[in-house]
Image (tube, rainbow, N blue to C red; front, side, top):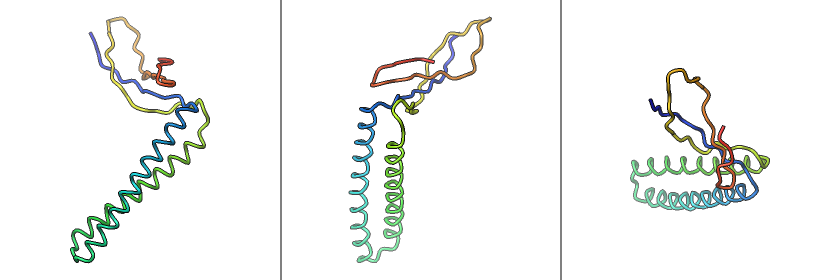
Length: 123
């Protein structure tokens, strides 16, 4: 019998991975900041047109975008605090495994460790 199991994929934080993540955070931050400025412009236009529903919707979007910016800043700060070699959970994948009567049942989930884009270890 074949069953489907779940494995956690973790990346080992290396210097290059840290730089890559920092660049990714900066790019996302800049994009969100640009979108926030655009939303603020749309809000001013909606206020001049006196459209209450549109104003409320845009204000909610602005709040969400400001929260996203705070989260990105926090993630970037946390990244600087993490030492190299730290394992970061990236995703979960499913795999098939053979199961036969009499096999030992292992309840702990498997982990796939990736370092610099290469599978380093399967636990």
